[in-house]
Image (tube, rainbow, N blue to C red; front, side, top):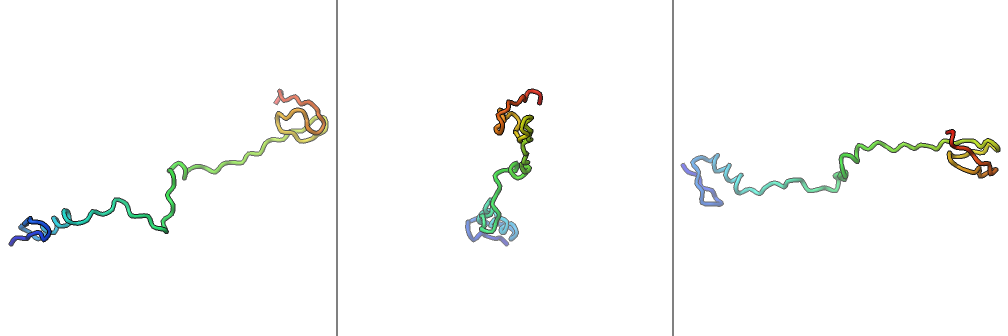
Length: 91
């Protein structure tokens, strides 16, 4: 017994061969990727963005004016409270 393809003139000796031919030659190809759905989470920009560690908050060290004991940041000169010139070269 022979099996003819209903969609083209090919003839096959086995039904399994016909079935394989129809599946391979006359079926619509599956999409490469499934379409995005509204419930899908948004894609990340890159794998590196996901692995970034959180930024650390570093507070500036405070120093004290020798004359009036006001708090100063390193390099702040003169003291805004009393006008004393600070020597930052030793730090």
